[in-house]
Length: 372
Image (cartoon, rainbow, N blue to C red; front, side, top):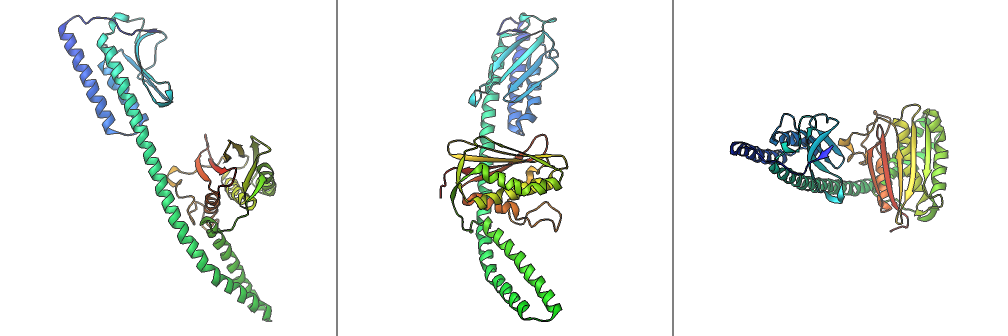
């Protein structure tokens, strides 16, 4: 391909006028595209169609736009072309540009107009400016959404902590008097009935315990542990679950000697809850990956499954108590809320993303040295 910076002269005043109108129309239409909004990927076809119409031989012009990770052309490129190009300046020096091509078999450098080259520079600058503004807006929206979610979870945490405390006393009384009745009763039917009451109270107490985990009300025992050993022990306990589901797992760790200051029981609870969920959603023959790596300050744990994935619309809800996608009777909806509570109490973070081509990845970030 041959790069043509600028060359050429237009043969008549009438043609110059015509080309000038096309340039002004191009800038107006581009501004309309930007104002109308939408995702940047949705705008790309409109951008290149608008630029294509502004060139002298618009029917044969081929516009190529490469911005960040997105690339689009108005039509397939011939093997040899001549083109004008302009660099699109983006943050972090991401390689981006816009080019207008002609087939080198039909056109030469003289078929480009100098004003077209200048127009292309202006178009590139406008695209770069708009991309940066949109990226900033998207980041602000994301941050605001995260803050709103944290506010909701904090309020929910306070409510659940109050509920848990209020329920603890009556549940303790139910269990105590139930055991007393069972011990004193000689009637077989009464003993059987009271056993059901006791079991229901124990189940309810477990739910209260999970609510207290979510609201960070559970006591913790911080100690320096080898993260590899604790993880391997948890996976060993879960091996029957993997076998029953016809699944395998792969455990990778960057630093086998990594020690983290954490409550080992609660970290095991995190692993159990997320991995059991991963086993539940994964089809037979799938593999669940557990990857641990670190930097100077934080330990990162990623758990990736090959299930159906989690719809982006409910990403913010999955850590709320009693929210579940499982059928009625198969889950309390407290597992991930417990995970969230434990991680929050350890001054850590948890996020969820897609595991391409299918599945979900949970990423846990915990300080290596306790910040408590």
